[in-house]
Image (cartoon, rainbow, N blue to C red):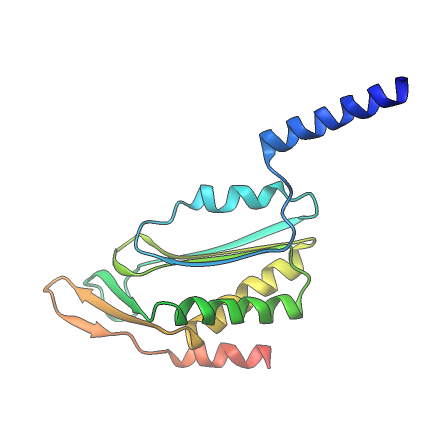
Length: 177
């Protein structure tokens, strides 16, 4: 009788904790392409609930001025729906094959994104920081070169210029073999 009562109390406590915190994540892999702004806190916070996670590394890419152009006011990003998400997931799967990762999330904006606004968020959670840092860099390197996204810089005078893959982005791929 006492043992049964203790089990019930423990179960009740576990259920209460899960209602407050939600269940722990188990290698959550998520990719998303969206028009709306990225809510950084709501994207990262759920990943912190996983008790196996010892490190969370994130990369936040924002629309900025390019090297010799100082009149960019926005980017216009186009993508091939379905194909972009599939490409992102393939890159995520390659990262999870290389490193032990507990969670990976990629959120990428499309449409018009103003100067200074977030355009991409990559979040990587792992038991240790080394894996998380390496995987995050790997994901960004592959996305820059292989993701089916097309970027147009919008300049102050309204002119548009397609953004080409940079040589340094292709060279960064050599690190990963």
